[in-house]
Image (cartoon, rainbow, N blue to C red; front, side, top):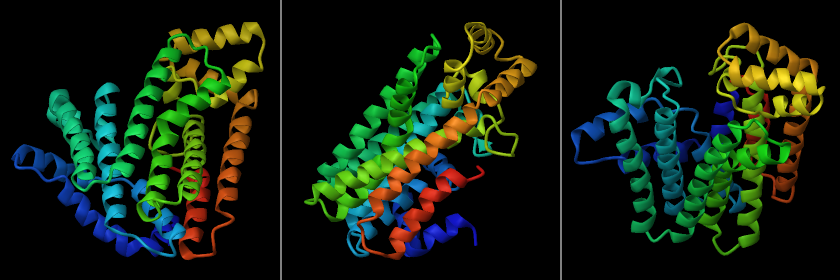
Length: 326
């Protein structure tokens, strides 16, 4: 059995019902919109985010979920999907998970409007049910994700990212949404237990950090993954392996790397040389060590919870994040 299926086992019934509710939450009176949302729903990814919501809520409440949990998971997925649709427009990307992106099929104007529609659907789902505590968690995540993206763009222009700024970017850009899933899962069932809600938020944040570092490491591997090797360098994104290498080289080498990333990022040979340079400077080893530190810190936060299939599945999820091949 695949590890993702194993993780899903304790929440299989919830995930099935969630899919129905999620499909309903997207419906509209506009035929074009329904055609597009149907296309989105049928090309969903691994659904890690709703899985985090359900596993967290069940772990902290002895296996309970309620309508709020389902709504929270649907809102997260609606907003996550909206950000992906907008990302594809921003990145001028024609593919998403091997399928055509919305902007490739329906052009940018429609893709942006669909993203806006999904965002508003998510917000209204919370408002209509008075889930204001959950809405606050999600709204903070959306704000941080936008700030993280803009911080990355601002820093990429100068290529002067320190390790601390890199962590701040990935915390906002990636980790904040997984943190929202986990705090929302807890808040949906034990809203009064602020200590547990905060603990789960921190747990999600640490997993998100490890997840993004793993993603950055894929840029330096030759294995068949979702994105081609060297794409971060081509896009002038400063990732942890590269930052470490730049901090541990001579001024001459640093000048060569920055010049390569800024002015020769379309040159395949040069990109390969930069990848090799980062490997030689132990950039990958350093990033892997940091990823494992975040993973271990996350696991520590689960220790006090009683043994349960949900806790086991979350531990599996934590390990899957850093061992995945895609």
